[in-house]
Image 1 (cartoon, rainbow, N blue to C red):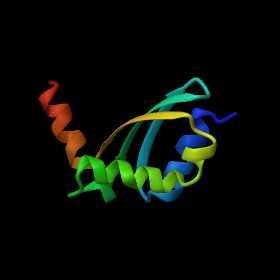
Image 2 (cartoon, rainbow, N blue to C red):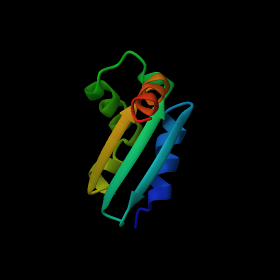
Image 3 (spheres, rainbow, N blue to C red):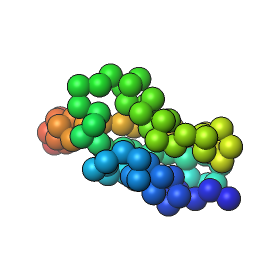
Image 4 (tube, helix red, strand yellow):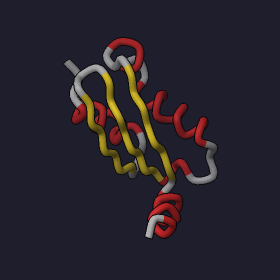
Length: 83
């Protein structure tokens, strides 16, 4: 069975300098992914990059993955807005 730690490891291995937090129950997962490679990319492009990083695991091992993606500068802006 796939664990949140597996997904975190797979993403971090394939998206350089990413910071990943994953929770889930073995079938449904939620992820927050911060990666410098996301800079200047649309949300759709960011999600496509995560799917590419996971490859066939999205077809075979992971039933559902909800994700929030952002570049490091987006995280800073989000934190400032939430003050």
